[in-house]
Image (cartoon, rainbow, N blue to C red):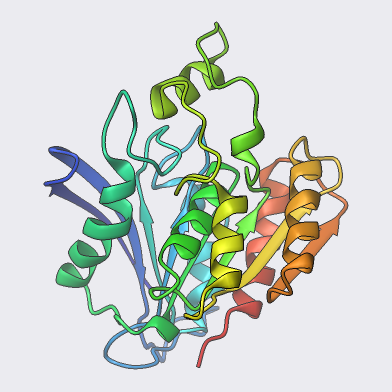
Length: 260
């Protein structure tokens, strides 16, 4: 596998930014690794970070490079700051950057497939919210999406206002105190819309530990998905909001992905 730290200028963000990219490599003599490629244009997983992290975190806290080696899967990990994958009220247009600019830029640099069946998105915590938000807003772009310990019921978080808490301050900067229910930022509204639409519906994977502070909102999402008869694989097991859980479950996500 090739691991690349790619610094580039974003026209949407009007600033330089960074993504970490893992690319498949076919090898014969690399000891302890079984690498392979699938085609000239690689199937791609967009892998999103959480609130306190950046583009590098998945390669620092897990063995994601080793996990994807035998799958022939490229991984794109952008730096999204504290944006909650949203066009911020007081900040940058990170949603537009993610959903419109990033795939085009990544494909201009690297041999990545544009086909829906070859594109997937996953993330943890804030990134789990981002993964479902992206796939449910753009179901024509992704065949599958996975959320690990995702902030899935953000619309019902009460503290979207200014306080001394860094998370509250960030949510205010992102949403400006507005009610996000029934908007492009509301996962519950989005999943209802996808269920009722005639178009493609991405497969969804949801995992959350029972000791996680986000467990109950993940349960509420599961209950809604069941009511809507959506294709959602759910894992509620022992675990908390930490890298032991995410490292173990990203491996399960990779086995679940509908790779051709």
